[in-house]
Length: 237
Image (cartoon, rainbow, N blue to C red):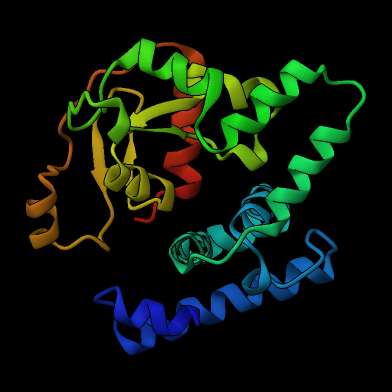
């Protein structure tokens, strides 16, 4: 359960945990009533949630409510996503998306293969990132067997071009891939790294992460846009 995970993995008080849990439930109920989503947020897989999150965060009624609530609702939704990433449940929804791509007559067979492989950081997407960065952008580890090709904006809410684009990817070691995917770290377009309050100072020291340390990234408007999405919508502050 989300509230139990939140209690065990944060320094939030009991009242704050209850507040965030209620916030997710309220948004879930209201967005279903508005037919923005068709099932409760706590029953979704990660890919379902990412699609729902995009719809919810851009809905005018949510924006107003979140503004009045001083971003409490968006913070609650980001924490919920983090929980789903770490829950490890099988994502059948994304498999259905893969099946739809395979059956799409408007996509060439070779392109289908590239798009599907990119979901797990393989194929052309991975090769492009290795050619561009050659090492983990954070740690500098160069052994490609230890590196993961990560999407900045999740595969599930990207179009096919973005699913294959080097400008929507980072080369990371498994630990940093998990931290970035869950929103526990983010990277600004300037290359500065920021960490979530969920990561303790002790763990930051062991992971050798320093807030606002800089890394070298491609510089263009596309990667800046992707990183901004991660900063605003996925990063757990």
